[in-house]
Amino acid sequence: MDPKKTFDIPSLGPARFPSPLQLSNNSGDDLFNFVRESDRVLVDVSLSGFQQARESGSRPECLEKSGPRETIFFDPGKTTAAIVTCGGLCPGINNVIRSLVMALHYFYGVKRIIGVRYGYEGLSRDCPHEFMELTPDKVKDIHEFGGTILGSSRGAHPVSEMVDTLVENRIDILFTVGGDGTLKGAHAIGDEIAKRGLNIAVAGIPKTIDNDINLIDKSFGFETAFDVASPIVRDAHNEAIGAFNGISIVKLMGRDSGYIAASTALAMPVVNFVLVPEMPLKLEGEGGFLQALEDRLQRKHHAVIVVAEGAGQHLFDDDRRVTDASGNVKHKDIGILLKDRIQEHFGQSGTPVTIKYIDPSYIIRSAPANANDSLFSNRLAYQAVHGAMAGKTQFVAGRVHNRFVYLPISKVTDRRKKIDMEGEFWFAVLQSTGQPFKMG
Ligand SMILES: Nc1ncnc2c1ncn2[C@@H]1O[C@H](COP(=O)(O)OP(=O)(O)O)[C@@H](O)[C@H]1O
Ligand SMILES: O=P(O)(O)OC[C@H]1O[C@](O)(COP(=O)(O)O)[C@@H](O)[C@@H]1O
Image (cartoon, rainbow, N blue to C red):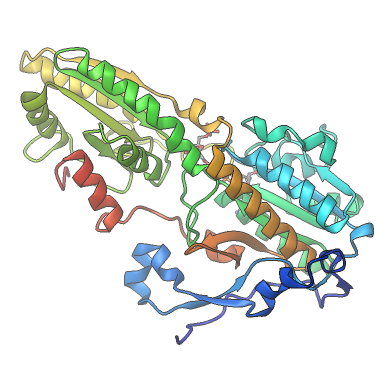
């Protein structure tokens, strides 16, 4: 294969110490063969962002395999690591925290591990929240619970203050667990560190239930999200069939990308319509959603609609943009709009309908990780620890085409991953739901 280019991960400097993993590895050096054979792997990353594949052709990129290195940058006994969790909750954050602590403590012998409270706010000057000391004992059971034991937040804080806090507290490695915004923040912190010539590594573990982080196969917690959503949709279907012309609307999260809604519909194939932010959506008139719904009711007398929160935002009369503390657009409630417009539409023709609107968004987001996500979170955290101990910085640990790799933060934040409306995944959704190819 002819690689297009290599995604180079910035490094603090040459590795200086033999890895304790190497010293403690009783079964010879098998652990390192994995990395030694080739520390690079050719992956056609463009194929994981379908739009991009069309734009850039499909030449492979050269990615660095993640995993333990024989020599490391930080002297474990003198190293302090910190963990911060930012943005919205997501199943698996506690699993990541637990695995980071266990890997740092037991694999490498890092004994001083600090939990930063309530996101980047916990690194800002005059922050009222004290750090939480993290030990294996403190984290051993936290995978049982959803949420984050450290707390999270949105909102900007001066990067220079955050770096001052790292310096004042002798922090050598900062693990940032978060989505697009958190990773951009981590990159900015890394830039400030480089500007000051400091030896502090910044590692990212991509988190968002929306699964909208570019290039990587999936973010942790996403599978749990549609796992938890599936029985809710099953029950919504029961509600729909329990009434003549029963209609259930389930709203799921997905600010810019409809992966949770689409995946739930495929996992629970009782769904008749999936509405996602990526699709054009027209309600009224020929070929519109309401006509498709009317056709469906005439044939089957019930319908289940799953709508992603970011879908159909152009349908609101009020086009004022409201943003959260981090600058993300806060979407208006598309579920309520649909309920009202469906009621109005069928009211006009005198067709009786019974509509149930269900919004389980926060219940899904705060659930504990399922088995697959627990495993995935665990492995991602291990990769992040190996990379950071080796002195890599401004990188994320991720999985691309089923391989664990390191990616520069800038590469995963330069655009959001979205469903390809002409790809196999969306065709599967159309086949499963039977909804018209276009409703806009
Ligand atoms: N470009 C940026 N530079 C620095 N910090 C940022 C940037 N974008 C977002 N952040 C910070 O990252 C944190 C989390 O971002 P947010 O968008 O709320 O969640 P997520 O990381 O899940 O996308 C917030 O504290 C926010 O201020
Ligand atoms: O109510 P909040 O905390 O603003 O969160 C809502 C947002 O959180 C999400 O679940 C995930 O967003 P982040 O990846 O930015 O954390 C979005 O789908 C949703 O728009």
